[in-house]
Each structure stands twice: as C-alpha cells, then as structure tokens.
Image 1 (tube, helix red, strand yellow):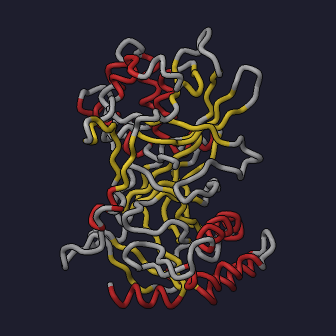
Image 2: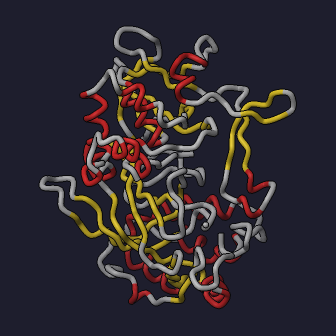
Image 3: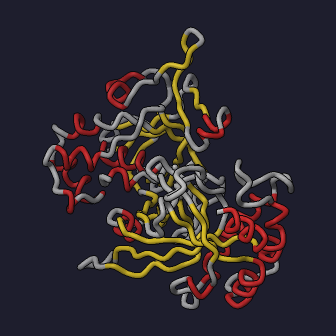
Amino acid sequence: MLRPLLAAAAGFLFLAGCAEKPPIAFQQSRFSDLPGYSQDRISEALPALARSCARLQARRADQPLDSQSRYGTPADWKAFCTGLTALQPGDEAGLRRLIESEMAPVAVLGEGKAEGLFTGYYEPLVRGHVRREGPYQVPLYRQPPDLVQVDLGEFRDSLRGQRIAGRVRDGRLRPYEDRGAIEAGALQGKNLELVWLDDASDAFFLQVQGSGLVQLPDGRLKRVGFAAQNGHPYVALGKVMIERGLLPREDVTMQSIRAWLRANPSAAPELLKQNPSYVFFRELPPPKDDSDGPLGAQGVALLPGRSLAVDRSHFALGMPLWLAATHPDPQPPHGEKPLRRLMVMQDTGGAIRGAVRGDVFWGHGAEAEAIAGRMKHPGRYWLLLPKPVAAALTASS
C-alpha cells in the first residue's frame, strides 16, 4: 500500500459526531456545480475508472463498499462499471453520457467546511544496488517476519481506518524498534536487506512516499513498494525543523528539507530520528510504461494525475470524484495552475486525515517531483455516485 505522507513531511474523524459540525456531511449537487467540468478531458481517467471498477465488481454483489453501508454495494455500481467496459480509449462523449446517466455528484463537507487541504506525492527515482558496496551503504529493509500488523477496525467499528503494529512477546503485542534503533543496526544480520541506496535522504523520502524506482548500476529499474510500517507514529520532519528554527514555515517543502539534509550531513541523522516511524518494502514488477504506476491501497496501479489518496475512515476506495483545486506550476517562477478534473479514490496514507483532504499522485520524474514537493493548496471535491446511492446518502446526511 502506497504511503503518501509528503504533506506531513512538509510540516504539516467517522460519520457520527457533533450535530452542528459533523466530521463529514454530504450535499446533493448538480453537474453544473462542478468547476471546469466541461473543460476536462475526462477520458484520460478511463484506465483508473476501469481498474477500480474491476476491483469493485470482483467483490460479492451484496457486500457493502464500506462498514457503514453509505456507498452502496457492487450491485449498485454494476450499471456504471459495465458501461465502462463498452467504451473505447479516448471516448470523451461516451464517458460523459455514461456518467451523467448513471451518476450524481455529491458535495463533501468536513467539520461544516467545503474546503480542505490537497497535497501531492510521487514515485521517486533513486540510485541503488542489490549488494552493499562502494557508495551503496543505506539499506531498504523487507518486512521482518516477527512484525505483526493489526487492523483495529476488525475489532471495533469506531477504530475503522486505524492500524497498529508491533512484536508479540509473552503473549502481548509490544512496540517494535523505532527508526533510531533500526538505523543503529537493530535489523542487521537478519538478511532483510532488499536493496542498498547511496543516499540516506533518498531512503528517507522513499519511505515518506511509500514506493519508488531504484536504478541499478547496469541501468535496470527495480520498483519497490510499501510492505509494512513499524507501528510508531509519524512525526513531521518539517514541523520539527520549524520548531528548531532550521527552516521558516513559509519555506518548508520537500525540496527545502532535502537540501538542508544534504547540506548538513553530520546533523541529519539526529534530525531524521525525530520521526520514529519506519517503512519496510517489497519488490514489485517494473513499470511497463508511464501510465503504469505503483499499486495503491485499493490494489490497483495508480494513474498519474488521476489517482487520489483519501482518508479511508471516511470513504470506500474505488469511487470517482470531481476535484476542484490548484497545483504548483513546475516551471519557474512556480505559480499556480487550476486542477479541476475527474479522479478516482485509489489510495490512502498516514498523513491523509479528514473528510476534505486528499493527496494527488503525480507519477515519477523531475516534473512530478517538482509539483508534489510544493503542493499544499486548498480545494474541495464532489463524489460521483450511482443515483440511488447518492439520493440515499444525501437524504440521511
């Protein structure tokens, strides 16, 4: 599962709650309410829609998409998903007809507000080797066999979306080693090294992103993805740097944090230890082309610019939505550009918390890094739901 935590690194609720400002609420809307709806080339999202629909339709027809039965069942989504299979790539008019005939937009509000924070993440490209030699001295570890991961939502509905991890000792789940202990060698000699990198800051940001491409000395690419996390809470490195006066708040981006770490190699290890969270990896099939992204939390390949990570405690993965926000222009002077497009909820992440909160997957490469590393923009979104599901949801909200 991909971990889009860049927003937390830069410094940066369930349905029932206060009657005045519930953690999440829904409002009936119209397609004319969606900013930029007629301008987006929505057919670019077809691969993402098809991948998610195939995943949804593989489930039992009467199984609710979420534990609170808010978003219907695969049977409710069958007409839309079946309609997708009849469309050819690039069929803009056909996709619009299908969406407008089968779906209805539903505005999402969090704590009574329509606007929330939207950030970006990407797939880093780093240098590595399958053996420890020369400059390749920083390991990426596989999941240790004694690491136990627990989905707390399986035990209490009120804990849905929350996880914990640790090691069982004397019949009790105990905390696993934190980042400081692991980087001091707690896992050495256990044959857990997946690959060795030549840069400690690359390894750190690869953990923040949750997946990446490792370029080997012979030019081959090895894709690595999230396997597990050590169970310790994520501490935002950007927030620590602001508190210590190392960076001004307005200048905190992934790029500025990386530059500081590389300019201060003797101080960097102590700073990195302030984040006790540690991510373990597994090898994934290499990409076939630029549209073949890493696997997200739904278990489908992410599509650059069309896949969104959301708070899984509020939503069912695989649902389409309309996003209205902005994003950084990757070209100097790095102004803002509109971001109004059809997207699909396909991922989640530890820093993605709240009803109106999202992390846009931008792919890999220099441009993706330039956008994702600077994206901290307000925005809002509308779910696109089968009409009967939308009607029931808004009537009960």
